[in-house]
Image (cartoon, rainbow over all chains, first blue to last red; front, top):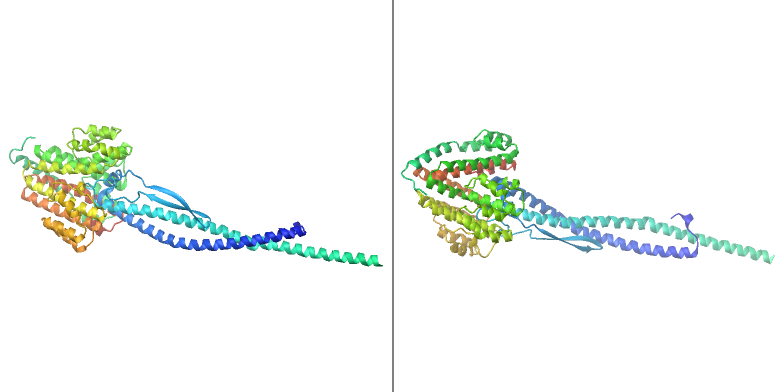
Length: 209
Length: 354
């Protein structure tokens, strides 16, 4: 706000004072929000680290199992067994609110199945197939869990960033400018008052002569 | 079915199979392959009896997939040729024994069609090593609904089971029960057919051992997945345990007591040794089960070889050849796929049946 645009009036001063008060209140609230979000973020970060580690572990295990199954059964038998899987996992997407940030809550159904619910028969298949199927079911579960945690983390980060920008704008731009304008108006009003006083004295002196 | 008169048909078949057996890849060659890189292995396989199939399929497939499909095609062709040279009851029993491939193919077609997959994709995973040859499979694939496929299979030996179980499977889209029932009937048929051939009793013992191993393996699988309740429908009748006995043993919760109950009833020495090992390890690890399964397969093959030498003019040389050929394909596939997955040679070697 350029000072030349400021009207040095009493009403403008009152207006500015009100704005400064509001900005300072907003600044304090946003600062608290930012700190709260950072705390939440660190909580989620811990979970994200664990879930990413778990995901990598599950992925490596699943890769090892499919390599082993390929070796033991060949892709022809694996593909034939895969034909027996008809049900696809369903994902229920909900949302929850963390300090005003809407984050996803993912619930998956029918990912993990029992050996008798997968669709292939037990008599014509091998135990390696069970373990590989279990490894991949666990991997899918882990992917879903990681997706939820990492999306939450990303959304929190975005919100922290924008809150930080707002706090900084209030702290270093809006509030100082408003304060400067307030001081300018105050100074200008004082000056006008002094001028008025001086003028009055002058008039009084002239009339008394 | 005409009975075989005199030993001459057995001598004829035995001689033909000795020639075929001599063409199988020897143990030393597997060791050599294990130390090669993937391109060298592929070239070595191309220089063997699999060359024709590799050449035929090279336009449709490439890389390791080409090798795997060529191995399966060669196996199917070899089995079909064998069925052609076998006389009467031997052919009947061999067809019966190879019907497990038909079960796998029929189920793959039914499942594929039920999921609406294109015929080309289903055909890629068929191995026509049973009595339902490639031409018949193409007819099945040309049908657009599983119900029509079942109608086409009216003359098939396992059709009654298919007709009984199909409706429920088609309604639920869940073919596992149908698959289990087909395999149960398969074992029952093999045992019934073996009664009419020379040294059939010994063969029945062998099939019963296979059933026992399959049942025990499934008990362990179900336990490992913490499945409780009724397991009788997953057990194959005809082995040395009745399905009720297996259910009773399965209901034992304590692992040691469970293995003890099995050991009390098992008489086969090698199977007993596997159970003892499992008890020592004190854990139901699937991988250890796989390794034990391979160890048992080696034992089964050694037993077959022994019986073949004891009874050179019987059903044994045929069955031994069928199994040896199957495990040749299994070993080559394991080496190529294992190398592709970068498994260490020692680990791949552990899975080979030599």
